[in-house]
Amino acid sequence: MKLKKVSKYMLSEMKNSILIFYLVILFITIFFSVSASDGNTSFNGMEMASSIFLFVLGLNSFKTNYLFLLSNGIPRRTQFRGFFLAAISVAAGIAVINRIFEALFTRVINYNNMFDMIYKQVTQSPVNSTISISWSITVSMFAITLGYFITLAYYRMAKTLKIIISIGVPAFFFVILPYFAFKWSSIETINRVESTIRTLFGVNGEYRPMNAVVTFLVLTVALSALSYLLIRKAPVKEN
Image 1 (cartoon, rainbow, N blue to C red):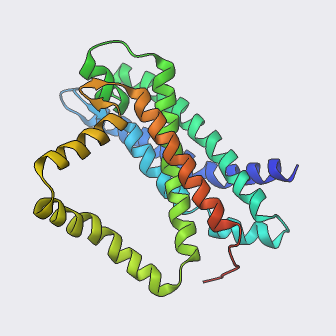
Image 2 (cartoon, rainbow, N blue to C red):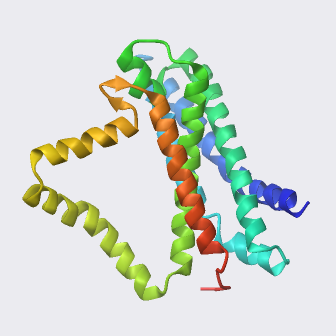
Image 3 (spheres, rainbow, N blue to C red):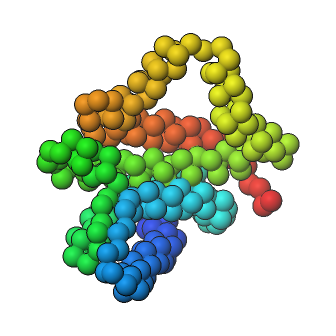
């Protein structure tokens, strides 16, 4: 019973943000479709916008809820499970809402969703809608879980470590890694790594969206496990 109540509470905390997000998307689409003088308005990749939104939602889904629920006697494990039950519901709901918006948008504007741009339009072959929905759900789950993991990790860090991570991680990926890749790695090694990454996401010659579904699912499970390790002994910190 506690788990169900926690999950409902988490959903209630998220629903207003989700409503505002889609109202903004709807307003922007209507505005540009009406204001376009030639009537040729296009809108592409709403999944990218919703993924960014879910990432931010995940970033803002821990501390306040954690302190409030803990003060009301809700164990950390129940909070963790409640969040992910809510996250699964949100991810599935957003995948469905995106499809509804797609059906509406295609009637008034030139609309292409991100899945079609990556897979369907490239291969020029019909793709099962179940795979498309599965892809959207796993992308959404990965985005919100990544945000949740990051905010949990920062919550557990000391102030000095937060500064080091905030500076060090971007520096590693955008400065150090490219430098060593250029300086010490052969073209064959770089091509092999790129080919592996493209294969994992199903865009390596033969376009296979289920590869991406499995990859996002594995990443989500891994981040969920790390998040559980972080939350199970998380202290109470007001600052």
